[in-house]
Every structure is written in structure tokens, then in C-alpha cells.
Image 1 (cartoon, helix red, strand yellow):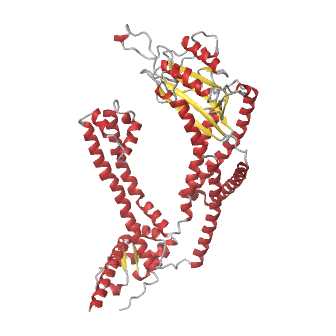
Image 2 (cartoon, helix red, strand yellow):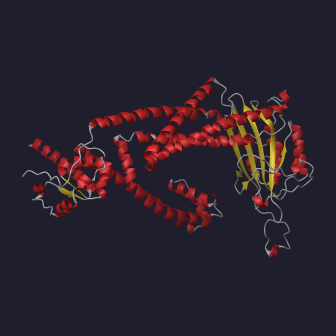
Image 3 (cartoon, helix red, strand yellow):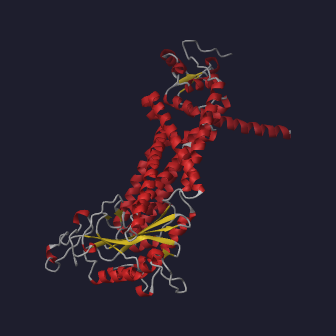
Length: 606
């Protein structure tokens, strides 16, 4: 018996979107993609034009010279092996001066230095002079337990800005004995045991090696470093004209309240003089093009905000556009400021070569600028997915991620509760003995390393022979074997659903399964089985009301018994969970295909 169409008061079907509109949409998307690729290429040229492999080699050479080299006068002490104040003076009077002042050729022939300037490794011009700075804390800044007050009179706490000692000390007749406040925009230094300000007791080294040695010996003999000293900074800069790179070096020695010494360093190789070669001028033209692109994007986004208003901020892609524009504006502003500031610093340096030029400020912000541009490039590449959404594979990927987002977020909460519980356990049990668990932050990174299989189990077992193995085994089992595999199971199950839905829609000749299946999942949709593609098109046009019909007829249709005998006469199926129906149909279709293949094989044999 032929199925009869539903009455007009029932399910009204919306016609499919005309094919020519899809073609126009495709052409518009491709046009936008082409323009965006030009912008992306321009951004990549600018970004990679700021860096080169020469930066790495220059950093490595300077690290070897100042961090790993010792001398006979220093008794084998290197910067990294400094463990006391005595070791610091040995390093300063030995490897440091040997690295800063190159006054002889490799065959001991004395070099004729122009304007008494030093060339490190004979290629890198030392800019101005080196600067040494220390920060101290006051005596009596910590509390002594009453039992020990008769034995201990002095107490110097760890470094805090409020506990900083700014009073003159020692000989009190020079800048190195008096506190100097530095009005610098350089960020405070975050060391191992403290956050250090920009001021301090400062002195600079003379232009010659002999005078520098005499000054260091004088300061050592007059106890320039005291019990209150908490950190010493050694700053200097150099320029290599061969590769047009500045190298700014900061050596830091912290003296914690526990005694001993902790060393760290910052070596920045940056390109501060931008326009020297023809390629640099090509980069300048790319910078102008980039600015024009940013202006065009700003105008485009402002127009979209004016039209869409609040709806504009409901799209994640629009938020990404805002982020890209904001980062680009900040990068352009810093680029202009950097160019002006370098010119001013070079003028000051040329007028007086016996002062310390503060290139550390520019270098640190140049590194932040490079990081900012790197993030901008990353998100710019991510935005390409927006223009590839018409691709089947990309649509499946985005549909999978959007469908399983809630499940992933919900499960991630449970995952991190267990993860942080183990991190606290590791910190409390092993924190005082194992370096990987010495801080809570280290505990978190260590546990991620355990998941990746990069972990030294012996150190944990030595720290606690009972809780160590228990911690390790239970963490690996619960996190690695159970929780991480649950993440994969959620994504895999959702991907199977999406793939089955796409298979059904392709079978029916429709598109846009993501929106359709979501709509069917959230509301009942009694549709004629033969008109599923039309119903799907109706959902694409966001006219779900036409798919439902009147409330009375929907109730009448859904209350009927769906018996196999009267299904043909009914001519419809009440679909309450469309994704499940799709998956069931796809699985049934696969089984029927398998049966047909087997029947063909049997018929061929006969």
C-alpha cells in the first residue's frame, strides 16, 4: 500500500537550499582564504626574519665562555660551580675577566685595541663596560627563637623588597658602597629564591683588565659582599657586526638564607638594528604590508560588530580575530618604540664609552616581543581551520570536538582532582629530598613526565622505600592506564557517532549532519522516513518548527503503536533520538552489505 503524504496541518517540509547559493558560499570562502594566505605568508616572513641560526651559535659560544670555562687562578672554579662567596671572587677575578678582556692574540701577541675596546673572541665588540650590582637585606629582619637568642645575635632573612638594606656600608665613599635607585623599565628578576628589584649597590669595571683586577681585589679585601648579600648581578653587552646581532648577558649568583650559592644566567642574542641589508629593507616593505592588513582587519571587524552587535561575540572565530588584531597592534607599537630607543642608546654609548649601556631592558622586551609574535603566528595558522570547514574531514573533526567537549570537560575535572591529589602527596612525602618534587610546580611537571615514561624511580624509592613504590604504582595505574584511556574512549566513541551520521547523510545526499543530529537529539522530530533529507535541509535553515507540525498531530502520531505490520500504512517513524537511529541504520546497512557479498559468493560457486 502506498504511503500517503502528511496533511498540510502536519509536518511542513522546507525545500533544500538552492545549489547556486552553495557555490556562491564556496567562492566567497575561497576568496577569503586566498587573501588570508597572503596575510599569513607576510606574517611568517616577518616572524622568521627576526630570528636566525646565528643566534643559537652565538648564545652557545658565550655560554661556554662565561659559564663553563675556568682558569688556573680560579682553582678550577667555573660560574656554574660557584657555591660560596669565596668561589664568586675566584670566578670574578679569573674566568670573568679573561672572558671580558681579549688583549692578546692566540700566540701571545699584544693586540692594538681601538679606543681601548675589547673584542670577545676577536669578533664581538664589548659595548661600554660591565656592571656589577648587589642587593642586601637588613640585620634583624627575622625572629630568633628565645632558646637561641643568647647564642645568635644576627639574623638575615631571605630577600624581600621590604627587608632590603639601603643604608651605606663599608668605606661609604663611593657608589659601590651607597645604594642607588635605578629608574629603569626593565622587569624585576625572578630568581630561584626571590624576586629582585632593579636598584642596589652598583659599580662598573674599568676599560682595562689590569684596572678591573685591582678594583675587584680592593672590593674583596674590604668585604663588599657581606652576610646580608642575597644576590649579585653581572651585566654586559656586546655587538657582532658580522651577523648584525647584539648579545646581552646577565650572570646571577643568589646567596640564599640557607647558605651556599645558586647560579643562573640569561643570554639574549637579538637583532636590534633592523635595517642594514637589502633583505632588511624587503622585511620593511613586508612590515608596511602587515600594517595595511591590520588596518583592513580592524575596519572589517568594526563593521561586523556594528551589524551583529551582541551576536558577534558568540562566535569563537570572532574572538580569535580580536586576539590576532590586538597582538598585532601591540607588536607594531613596540617595533616603533624599539627602533627609537636603540638609536638613543647608541648615541649615549658613542658619546661616552666608559658607561654601562642598559641593553638588557631592550633585550628582555625584545624576547617578550618575539614570544608575542610566535603566539600570533600560532593562532594565525589555527584560523585556517575556519576556511577549511567545508572539507569533509575537517567537518568531522570539528563536529567530534564540539560534541565531546562537555564530556571531556566533565571528565577533565575528575582527572585533575586525582592528578593534583597525587601532586600534593608527592610534594609532602618527597619534597625535601628529591629535586623533581622540591616545589609543587615541579611535582606537576614530574607527574606529566611519569605519564610520558620519563622518570627516575630510584630517587623516589631512596627517599621513601614504602610510600615511594606505592605512589608510583598507583599513580601509573590510575592515571595512565585508566584516566587517560577514558579520554581516548570518549573521543573515539564520539568520532564513531559522527562518522555514522555522515555516512547516513551521504547516503541520503544531504549535508550539514552536525546541526541536524544536534537538533534531533534535543527535540522529538517525527518525519517521514523518505523525507529525511528534506527535514535535514529544514534544520539547516533553522526552521525546526516546520518539521514538528502542530502539537496535536505530533501527540497523535507519537502515541500510535509502531507495529511492523502497520508501518507501511503509517508512512513515518517517530524519531526521538535521531543519532541512535542513524547509527543503527548504518550498522544494519553494513550487515546487509556483508550478507549480499556472501550470497554473491555462494551464487558464483553454484
